[in-house]
Image 1 (spheres, rainbow over the protein chains, first blue to last red):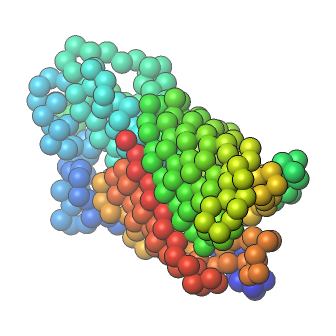
Image 2 (image 1 turned 180 degrees about the vertical axis):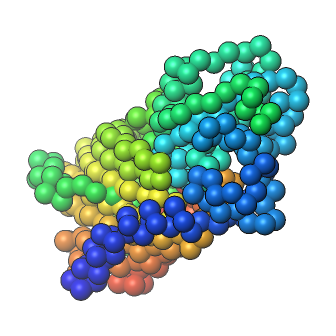
Length: 158
Length: 213
C-alpha cells in the first residue's frame, strides 16, 4: 500500500508540468455550443482548432468575442459586446456560475462562457452601461477573477 | 473529544478537493449526494456569496448504524486563480444530532463534524485532498482523510460531456482495512456531476452526485 501511495505522490508531483504542457500545446476540441469565426487555423489561447470547427472569434488585442446564436441575435439588436478574460475558469461549474450571475441581469441580453478561450462573452442591451469595476465585481461574485476586458463595436466588427 | 478531532485534522493538514465544490456562486443552490465505502450523505447548500454556503445534511454511517442530521457551514477560505488552473481551500463544520439506527441502540446525542478540503485542477488534471473528523458524544469519535487524483482523457468545451478517470485513496484508522482504494469515473455536464466507482478494498460502491441551480 505504501508503494501505491508513493506512486500517487510521484504522479501528483509530475502533474503540473504535464498539465501546463497539454494546455499550451495539445488541446484540440470539438465545439458543441459555441461557434468561432475569423481566425480558423490560428492558435489562439493555446488551442489548435479543427478544420471543421464552426467556432468564430472576433479578435481585439488578445481577446476574441465567441459567437453563438444568442450572441449574434443580441448584436443584431444593437447591443454592445464585452469580452472578459477570466482566471480560474476550468470547468462547467465555472461557466454555470457566470452564466447564472450575468444571465439574470436586466442589462445583459446574451452571455456565453468559452472555456477554451477562457473568456466571458457578454452583449449588453442597447443603451445599457456596465463599467469595468462593476464587471469585475460581478465576476468576483461568481467566484472567479476578471483579467483583461475588451468592449465596444470594434470588437464585433473586426 | 472534539478537541481531539481538531488536533487530528490539524495534523492531517491540507491539500485537495475531492468532492466537487460545496460553495457555489452568490445566490446558487447545490444538492449533493455522497456514498463511499463507509457512509452515505445528502446535503443541500445555499451560497449567499461565492465564499461560503449554509446547508442541511443527513449523514448515514452504514458500518456503525449511526445517523447524523444537522446544519453545515462551509467557507471557501482561499481560492488561487491562474490562466490554466484553479485551486481551492475549504473549511467546513456541522452541528446537529446523532443517533443509533437499525441494530445500534445508541440514543440521540449532540454531535459535530469538522473538515477541510483542498483541490488543484486544470482542464486535464485534478488533485484533491479532504480530511474530516466527528464527535458524536458517547456514540463515536473518529477521523479520516482521503486523496484523489484524476485525469481527463479529452478536453471538453462549455456544455460538453466532460469525463474524468480518478482514483481515491482514503485512510480510516478505525477500520480493519485502514487504507482503501477506489477507482471511479466522473461525468460532468452543465450543472450536473456524477461520480461512480467501486472500492477495491471493501467491495463497496461509490456514488456521488451533485447538481447546481
